[in-house]
Length: 60
Image (cartoon, rainbow, N blue to C red):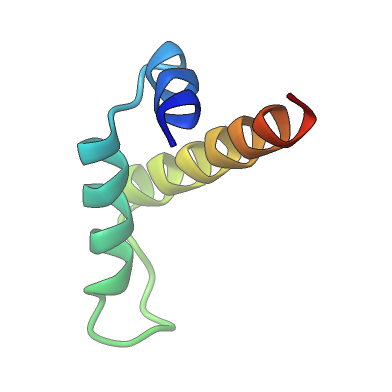
C-alpha cells in the first residue's frame, strides 16, 4: 500500500484525493447519471494512475 501511495503521489495524487474522487462517483443519485466533466476526467486519470501503480507493484 505504501509503494502504491508513493507512486500515486509521484503522479500528483494523494490518497485523500483518490478517496474523494471515488466517493463523488459513488454518490451520484443514479448510476447512469453523468458526472460533471471535470470529475469524470479526474476519475479516469485516478483510475489510470491506480492501474499503473498496481501493475508496477505486481512487477516488483
